[in-house]
Length: 362
Image 1 (cartoon, rainbow, N blue to C red):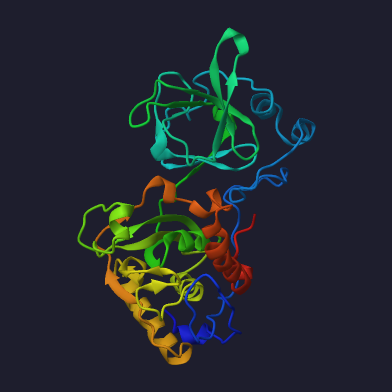
Image 2 (image 1 turned 135 degrees about the vertical axis):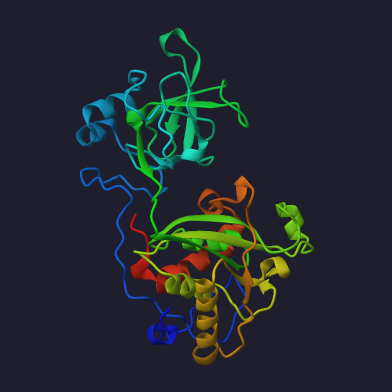
């Protein structure tokens, strides 16, 4: 890891009302690194794999943009032939997006092979990814499944799927774009705790090069603790996020610089009104490279940037436990709630100002 001091410079203090303050100077941006959308469709100006804002586009406009066969299914609720292509029984690991607007719909771990001949899933990505309405066409009573962002027809939902949900999301393959997980050495994961995981997750989801952010728990003595257990402060676990990033588009230096910018690492076991060891500032390392990188940046920041001593702990990662489903993607699904507006939003705004050249393109 290059010495962080070579790429740090002092920038004016940005006020953050949602977390504890420190008399520190700001951590600077890295040199801009270019990142592309996961899927590029230049002919479709509404297509985005990161934008979650709902679309209101007329069918006439979609007809100009979409291929005829996709338009027939997505906008006219047509159904493709069963056993079309290989998606219905493909077991490749990856992510499924809406072919019309790029919205994330499913992960491959939510998929199962059904004898119906269409791609089938037992669970959707999140509560906002797919919406439903009653379908009485063809003399049947069914539940139609629609993309939560563009309202395009995807297929139908049935109650004959496998456990744990008992649901079968029967989808048209043409309505789905599939991107396999990368099977190379370009990705890395790091686990960080900077107070409430809702805040940390929301920030890193907007950083170019970050492929996935999962809220969860690490450290402590309780196996697979619940949120309620962690909140007691007696488990020793911290609220953390597991960040998966593409090393060709970002790097550990930048991940750490964002970390030390959007939270206060000089307040012990506290971020703003969130108090307790579960909110401690912590870096969980999984190898010597990550440990040394964490030690290096803290040493340099203590010497050159922070007036108060950094209290961030550096701990070995024994096990990361994913948090309950309702904690995942929390900010994007609950923007109207006071905590999101008063605590998380200021952190995001601060991040966007300092790292404006490193935001994901929407």
